[in-house]
Image (cartoon, rainbow, N blue to C red):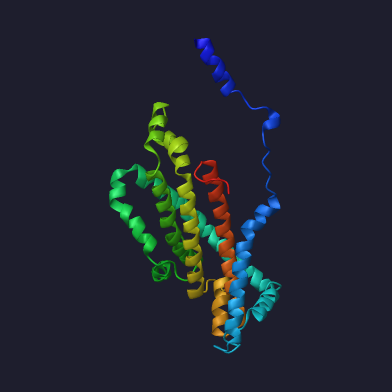
Length: 288
């Protein structure tokens, strides 16, 4: 009887012949890049077209609101100027330094709040409150504490980014499946070992989201700080933006705004690619 049942099962679950397997068409890498790129190109084209139509409408004079063509020409000229490139380097250096400090502080704060219950009750809600506080509100205190110096800008950037990073990590830890924690403990993981090998890897997608949001806060805080205070007479992007406004140089002002925007979305796109790869690896998203 058992032999008779086994034979149909073996036939039913026998692997299909290699010739019968249908080969799925491979997607060309260039086609995947273009499918992800063309919506952005189309959106940029629509923005430029709308900008040109507004300039042609005469709503504002050309010296106040120039069209995209003279602004792009001015941008290409500025890219050949050493002071302009130095300003980009100075701003990126400040952003990187402030963001790294904020990431270290935010990560440590998020882990401590997650592990220590009394600390969560004490400052857990304050972390969320700091995220909603405008970063520019910290600048008068920063000037009072550090004068107009690099320390003042670093202070504002860190306070703008660290709460978002801590909040992202804390949210990720809170949403780790209890089953994973129980399995880790059953395998002998305790304390920091449990966090290192089980909790933090499971919370990584949310943590990357917090890092991405923290960068957005850091970039906005830095721009506000550079516009308000000129530090050490360094030609940062914010300082050049303020000078362009003071001299009513609309072409340079708009060119600088384009550069600031492009830097912001470039870094944001890098975080987005990292977030997608982690989610695919963690089985949280399908490969589109």
